[in-house]
Amino acid sequence: METANPFAGTLPLGQKLTGLKKLASDPAFALEIGKAAEHLVCADLIIQGYRAFLSDQGLPYDAVVDINGRLIRLQIKAACFPRNVNAAGKNERIAYNFSVRRRGKEGQSRLTNSDCDIVALVALDIKTIAYFPIGVCASTVQLPPPGYISNVRSDYGWESIDQFPFASALSNDASLYERLKKASRYNCANGHEMTETNSFYARDGRRRCLTCAKDRQHRYNATEVSHVS
Image (cartoon, rainbow, N blue to C red):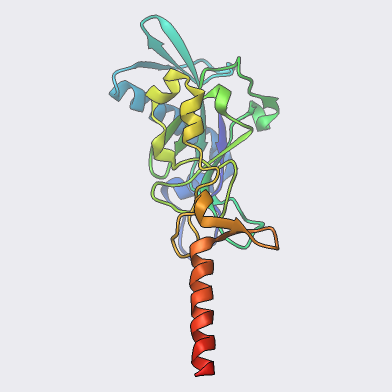
């Protein structure tokens, strides 16, 4: 069970950390965070009508779902809070960050496609779970919070974390998950959708919004006309 610890920040003098923030602030609580995620996944699946069980320690998967005698193995990853995953860039991009392919103590082992069937990615702060077939997962999966719109393009971006139900992962339909990628769809700073027909690459190599460029040109032309008159 690998846990991400994205919580960072300072508190006013004298204020104490409580609840999940307290757990996330101290690596000594990593085991407790992992347990919380594992129990949350099992509870979610049981409520949906599945027979779910926690596995024994030392296995490459954390839980098992029994579907008519067929055992589905789940590896569970947890993130306490979303964070800016574009820290090196000028514009922030907030997402839950999961190191999917790391497993074992300090992530020294690599999770392979034969180790489990499904990966459950848990956002503990909002108690939301995204289920992925292991075969569609890269080394890292970054999932935005529900309703979040980024201005930063990511060729490996996905839909928000609440868009990946267990039934979809169970189908093991890779094409379904390809459709849930946001490879070329995001919004500019003014909210215009950056589709192929509403975007272009400027001389500096960055992708720009065509609608915004036209608006700027119209404003410039109007200014030039007013100066002439």
